[in-house]
Amino acid sequence: MRRWWRRWRGKNPGVALWRLVWWDCIWRVVSWLILFFMFGHRWWGLRNVPDRGPVLLLCNHQSYVDLIALGVGFDRRHFHPMAKLSLFNNPYFGWFIRSLNAFPVDQENTDVKSLRRAVDHLKTGHLLLVFPEGSRTIDGKIAAFQPGVMLMIRRAKPTVLPMAVEGCFDAWPIGGKLTTRARTGAMYGEPIPAETLLEMKPDEALALLSERIEGLQMTLRQRLRHQTDGRYPLHNPLIDGEKPARFEPLPEGH
Image 1 (cartoon, helix red, strand yellow):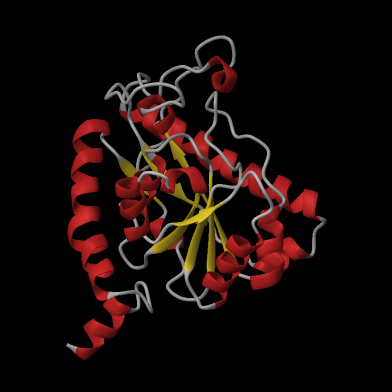
Image 2 (image 1 turned 90 degrees about the vertical axis):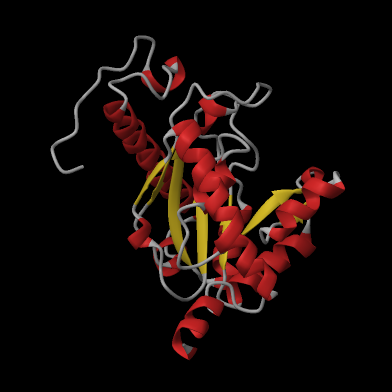
């Protein structure tokens, strides 16, 4: 019993007990049911999430669905996402995302306080979720990464885990409405030691991270199209080319 209790508390050390109960017993269960029945959500690669130590989670940002799509897969550990300051303006929604460990960052100004808080989260062994593009995509493609990512890596030296979501842009594009005409998925890539990235020039390291995440996104895109006979994700000429992408079936066992 004590062993189970220590393991459960270790999912998010130092936080109030009610947050653990809220994440595991309510939010994650309800979110899974919603995503599964609305979007047939699937995820791959959870074994790649380290069991301990500081981890910087980096993911492309397609819509407000992203946080839920990523969170339902995390069963062994909980993460702390950075969220733009304006999301906390509404007191009810602000409370909701704070209850999921989110904390604000002011993207309009140099927010030293939030950056220091992010580094502190990593140094105390937490998982920190960052969307390195800084905002949601306007076309489904991955935008340039913000340089602050490398500053976090340099100061905290965490393991870096590239991740990707796909289909969330179809589900709720920026400036659009929530729709069920989508199929969503999340993929967790191979972890990268901080030392590997710090040995590179910052621009080269960011390019490598962007390449890894884009590769995960394209793999997800193929798998979701395979599962839906090429119907979803919806055709996006900026990603698939001017003509609809050719559907390539995956080998058996995938």
